[in-house]
Length: 126
Image (cartoon, rainbow, N blue to C red; front, top):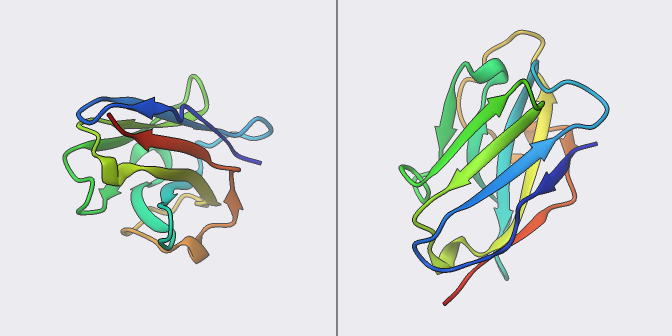
């Protein structure tokens, strides 16, 4: 239901842009979150976006480096990742939940979301 793309090998300090799109429905009334799983670690929430770009939230580990935004013309939520670090390595997943016009009040756990993508792998290494 969700498709992530953009994962790749990047050098420390580099930039990657991840994309999350929904081929069969519009994302404009959905809350979207980005999560990642590092090797040997639990799934970690890193960035959240309220429907229609009403608000966004970031985990402390990525604050000021990662930026989330929805482009309605492409029905895609982007995650721009700057100043990449080796600890950003992992599989990145986007997740979505219908908003019904409500604003996302803050970061949410994985259980809040109803739809998930298959993940895209990010490796940060020199």
